[in-house]
Image 1 (tube, rainbow, N blue to C red):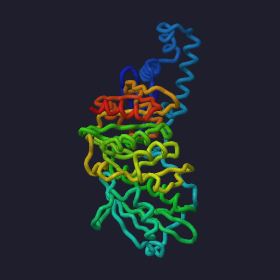
Image 2: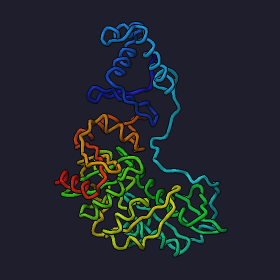
Image 3: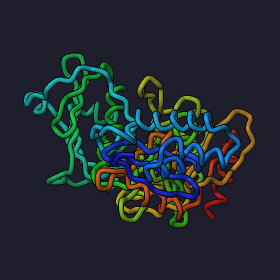
Image 4: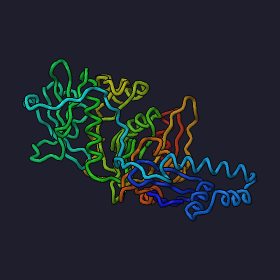
Length: 390
């Protein structure tokens, strides 16, 4: 097998392949690991098939055919053979608005009438608003992160304004995006703030997750959208847990600790009735259109918000899944299963020497308790997780 820009890392009886300068992670089981290792030792497919036939109940021809298919799939993915294109180090789950981009003009910048500064994680961002009306729409969501004093040199800037029957957003003086409604502007503005803060410094990971804390320990709830993690994160906060953030959770590069990003949680319509009973002001929260869905960003009591500059120990990682009429079931996960779940959730791994730093991720997972949680009863799920955190 010719030399290729792929790094390998053992975890239990599996092998992780991380392609240099790529956003791909591949998990090989014991058989795939064996084939890969024998290929790297430059054994022929025929010899590898002979070894597989001697070990497993399969004919030599079937073994050779299956191995050839496996090798061909690796070639298509760029793991063997030709060199691959260099890609970005992070790819966060943020959809584009699809509108035309235009260049920003000084005239519009001068129309910004309000400046506010926010501390998000370890990043200070100045937001320039074209009117007090726009500022008031963002305040319920990020007002708790407001810096009272003017910051001479913020790390990043975002400008939002209304003109020519459209709403506009520009980050760090770059291209301008146009939106039809203020609701779209708010949802994309919040996503921009979160992702700018998350990528402000190199991270071990940027998780698509919510997080809470208790007794100086952090509980991370990760997974794809629609699984109930935001509802569960919000409910735990309303039951006395410290709120660390929802949707985007950065993990510090060197310490592996959680960096709080306590922007208001993003709740879809299915959870409004459940949460409104515990949050009296929820009914006053205005709905926002976010990537084709109607959501609300309820403002949580400030006493529940953790200081965005104080990191928290990563102790427990749970992948929740709401299922209709299901029993509450907490189940231990292996590190391999946890990595697979993180990949599927759209979480992003940090880079080291132009490849994913998977060895550090594996070590980080090895220090944590890893679980899946299936539930339909929110109160039972809260009680189960509260017991974990004692």
